[in-house]
Structures are given as C-alpha cells and as structure tokens.
Image 1: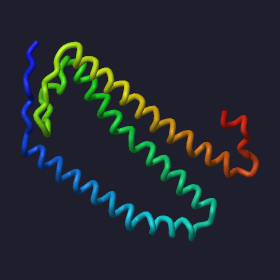
Image 2: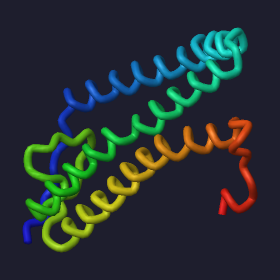
Image 3: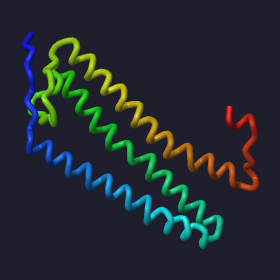
Image 4: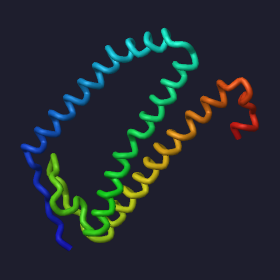
Length: 149
C-alpha cells in the first residue's frame, strides 16, 4: 500500500478562500439587511398569506441541504470505488495524506451514510414542517399531545 502526500493546489486554495469570503459576506448582508426587510414584509401581510410565505421559505431552507447531500453521496461512492481518499483528480487546499484500501472504504461509507442522513433530513423537513404548521394553525386540526408522539 502506497502512503503518499497529495500536495495542496495554491491557486485552488485562493479560489476556495475567495468563494468563502464572498459567501460569508452575502450571508452577512442577508442577515443584516434582508432579514429586517422580510420581517417587516411579513408583518404587513395578513396572517394566512404570511403563514404561506413562511411555509414556502421553510421548504426551500430544508431542500437546500439536498444538493449538498447528493454531492457528498457521489463523492463517498467515488472514494469507495477507487479505494482511495481523496479520490484521483481531486484538488486539495492543504497537504493531505493519501489513504488507501480499507481505511478509505470506511471513509467512503461514512460519507455515504452522512449524505443519506442529510438528504432524508432535508426531504423530511420539507414535508413534515409545513404539515405541522398547517395542523397547528388550522381551526379544525388543533394539535393534540397524541399527534406529537
């Protein structure tokens, strides 16, 4: 078994750093400017419309983890297929010890399991949360203790 080092790609590292800075900046802008605007917008709507907007927003938030889970699933399967972590052709942002054989397969399996958990969580949340909000707010479908168990 060959134990080598995958050397970091400096241009890729810079690209990843720039992307992270841009994403964190956008997140800060969303929290600082868009969130107060959205809160004020929801206050101006009638309750039923505001609840519908919140349901759609929650579905989008939960479904946003599904693409990441699908990417991790593909990456984990690639690790298991090549019995190598990181798999061939993957760029790394820091020097990384090459892992081969059974240890790589275990990491691949863990990635697959974690990705499936993310996908199930996203899909379950996208379906269950609006359902429970509807039950909580429906005049005929009041939530009881037996419904939550």
